Amino acid sequence: MLRIVIVEPETFTLLGIKGAISQSPDIEVTGSATSGKLGFQLIEQVNPDVVLVDLLLPDMSGLELTRSIKSKTNSKVVIFTNQTHSDFIKSAFRHGADSYMLKSADVELIELAIKRAYSDECLLDPKLAKKLLKSLDKNRYIDPNSVDKNLLDSPTERQIQVLRLLAQGLAFEQIAKEMFLSVSTVKRYASDLYSKWHVKNSYEAIKRGAMLGYIDYNLIVNE
Image (tube, rainbow, N blue to C red):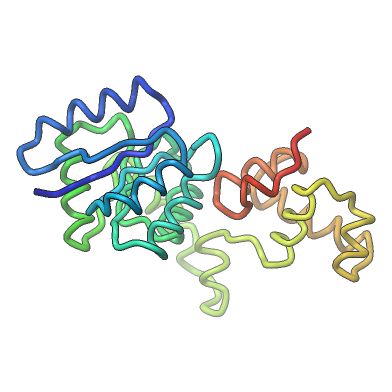
């Protein structure tokens, strides 16, 4: 029998999906957790075949958890979320997710995603497939040397470095000294990132960076 763990912060949703999947004769829910840290501890203890992971956890990004699961255990990961933006989908697969499902999906489809992931196959929620294909199609005619940057709309290392320092509470002047750059250059890196992610300020950028797995939640300075 295929064994799974569910990491889901909302108690009502957790109980619902546990109850639904438990009816399957082929899948056993061996445990569940409502936070990333507790979830990873459980995964290390029970060594499940597949883990269902929500992207928005209270203590870390679900992408951080996915990366840890894939790098430190043998478990497969099925993202289980309400997030439909193509950035989240692409980031999830970039961090190692095996499948990506919406919480609105029928339980039969979720079970199929679990089984496909276990068999080293990928399943993307059909409701999201068209949106992702449209996103990729926009980049059909691009310079081959910049495919990765444009296709995934990934921030540069410099932009992420600036973002992480902003998340630690540093001002632009302090970041400039830290990175041995001019203040105007640092501001340009930040501005370019805001435009890329369609956010208005550093607060929104930090929030988005954490959700996309670029920033460790533990590094963010609480206001």
